Length: 188
Image 1: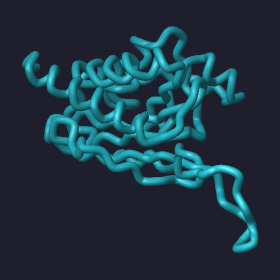
Image 2 (image 1 turned 90 degrees about the vertical axis):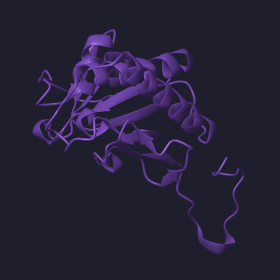
Image 3 (image 1 turned 90 degrees about the horizontal axis):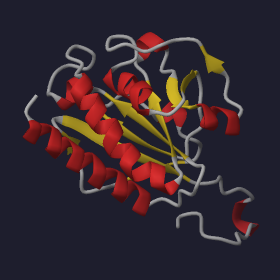
Image 4 (image 1 turned 135 degrees about the horizontal axis):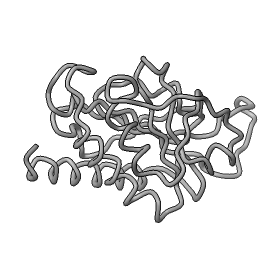
């Protein structure tokens, strides 16, 4: 893969996650889930042309932004792993997540999961997670992993490479009806 293409992908990912963080109230210990099709980034059909170089570039770009802020990254696998996620063991322990036994490959988990296993300090797979926000590169369907109530986040980045990209934030439920009062603004 051309270095210019990987540099452009890294720049897009970095800008996208910075804008996501700017529009959400994430704090130390929160989780951002990533769904990623490296095939779609290449302009190919999801699951048909996995690229480890692209997965490595995307994961490194995200970790460069999230790790200094103390925000966990969870990387969703493909349907061949039932959308299980790679997280740091410290994330699994903090949130009492059940660790499962599987090791991702390019065609069962995907390039981003393989790259996460390479780049995380102590990676483990978990079946389920409730993340605080998410980034979906290539329409991989991350909604099942973002807490209710989900909020669509709009950024200036609409594509990473050739893949459509969407973002989700979340907020606590507003309950109580018309008489309820809230001591804070959940949209900030």
